[in-house]
Amino acid sequence: MKIDKNCVVELDYKLMDLNNQIWESSDEGGPWVYLHGHGELMPALEQALIGKGIGQKLKLQMQPEEAYGQYEADLCTQVPREAFAEVQNLTEGMRLAAENQDGVHAVTVKKITDETVTIDANHPLAGQAVKVEVKILAVRAASDEEIAHGHVHQQGTCGH
Picture 1: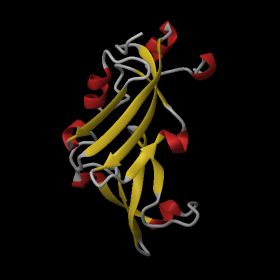
Picture 2 (picture 1 turned 90 degrees about the vertical axis):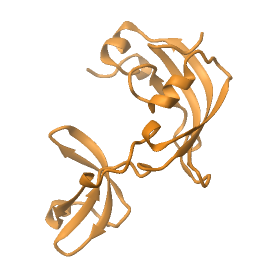
Picture 3 (picture 1 turned 60 degrees about the vertical axis):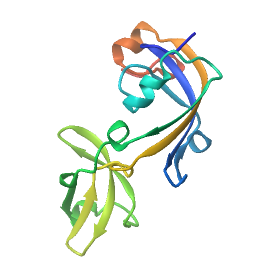
């Protein structure tokens, strides 16, 4: 089976900056399993995977607009320090989950003072070109339920 919209795909992957520093890889967290064509990948990578099959490898270099976008200064905000009272060992560079009206988003702690914490909701690689290496491990047709929900169900269900 070849990768197309509504296929469940399993990838070995490595995400690197242009200095070959590895930012994420399946060596750390296991293979990446996703529903193709539903916006779970960087658009350039998703497009490059169409028509590929099990065992194929792909190396791709992407500009910021093809990967994590340009850096947006307005995604940096100062929050009162007391909002982080329950966060143990708060340090600069720490990644946290923050909730707002749009849902839960990952943020990076940029600066800590006695009164405020500056958080950045940009992806750490925003504004940078990146390299991705993938190997396709598995491809299968998604179930009707997975397609309806827009994501892969592990062990047959997602708990909705």
